[in-house]
Length: 551
Image (cartoon, rainbow, N blue to C red):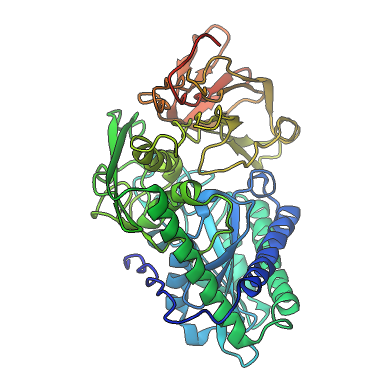
C-alpha cells in the first residue's frame, strides 16, 4: 500500500489588488454553497439508511481541481470538515486525471488516505468547463452500513488489521460517461451483508452527484465565465486564509500551548489507560498542532490516520477563530499538523480503524483545553467527548439480518458567556440528532423504557456544564449481539477557569432481572436474549468559572 497523499500546497497571498470585489466573492460563495446545501437535503430525502437520513452521517463538498474544498454543506458532521481532499486526490491519481470524462462517477474508502473506518465512502464526479477542461469535483461521503469483514456492520473489537473490517474501494469507476457499470454495482452488492441499505444509500449518493452537476450548470455556468469561476475560487481561498491568520494574531499570543488527558483503555484486549498529549505552537498568525506525543499505534481498532486527526484540529480552530463563516480549505491554511509515524493518530496502512471515533472528539477537546488554560475566556470547559456507541444486531423470523446503531447525547462544557448546553452529541457531531425512539421501536426488536437527563451531572461553576443523559433499552428477541464503545471515565469532562468536572458516563447491562448491573463500556459482541436491559449514561459537561453560592 502507498502512504497517504500529501496535503495541498500553501495558499499564496495576493501580489496585487484583488481582481474581484467583496460583493462578487460573496455572491459566488453563496451560489456554490446553495448547491451543497440542496444536495444535503436531497441526500437525506432519498437515502435508505437511518444513519444517513436521521443521524446525518454524511458530508457534501465542492472541490477545485487541486482537491481544495471550496464549499461544504452546513448540516453534516463537523468531523468531516475539509477532509475529503486526500482521499479524492488518491482516487484521481489511481484512475489518472487524463482518464476522467464528463459523466464519470467514482468512489473510494481507501483507509491510508482517509484515516477513517471503511464505512465512510466518498462518491465523486468531475466538473468540466465549457472547453472540456477539468474545473473541480463534487463529492458526497456517506456511512455505509456494512462492507463485509469479520462482523456485521464491519466494525468489531476483534479486528486486528484493516482487512478484517471490510472491502477497500480505491478510485473505482461506477459510472463511465453517464452509463452505470452493472458489473461494478453487482460487485459492491455482493460484498455487503445489508445490500438494500448499501445500494439504497449508494443510489442516493449517485443521485446527489447528478443533481449537483445540474445545479452547477444552472447556477454557476450562466453567471460567470470559466476564467472568473477559477479566479473566484482562488479569491475565496485567499481571503479565508487571510481572515484566519488575522484572527490568530488577534486572539492567540505566540508561544507553546499544551494539554493532556487519559483514555480509559484501548479496548477489551488492552485495559491499560492511555495518555493523549497534544501541543500547539503559535507563531505570527500560524499554528502547528503537535501530535507527536500521542501513544503508539494500537492492535485494537481505535486508531486513526493523519487526515482524521487534522480534521479534528480544524474543527477546534473553526470554533475558536470564526464559527460563523462558511468553511473552505483556505480558512485552514495557517493550521498545520506534525506527526511521528506509528501512533494512534498516524496509524500504518494496515492498522484497524473500526472505532476511529473513540478518541476523535477528545482531540478536539484537547485543542480547546490547550488554548483555555492560557486564555480561558476563549474556550469552553470539557464536554462529554465520547461517542457512546451502542449497537444491536440479529436475525428476524425470515432469517434476514437486522442492525441498529446509535450514539449518546451528553453535556457540553460551560463557557465565559453562559452555561454548557445539554444534551447534544459530541463536538465531532455538532447538533446532529438521535435516531428517534419511535423509529427504533417500530423497526427493530428493541424497547426504550426511559430516556432522561441526568440531573446534577454537569460540573458546578459560575457557568455550569450541561447535563448528560440516561437511556434504558430492553431487548425483545433472543440471540441479539451487541457492541459498545464509551470512554473518558478516568478523565471526565474537566472544568475551566476554576469550574468543576462533570460526572462520567458508563454503559451497563443486566442480562436477566436476577443479575446485577455490570459495566460494558467497551466490548462485544455480547449476546443477549429477550428481557436483557442496557443502560447508556453519558457524561455531563465541565463547569466554567469558580462556583458562586448554591444552585
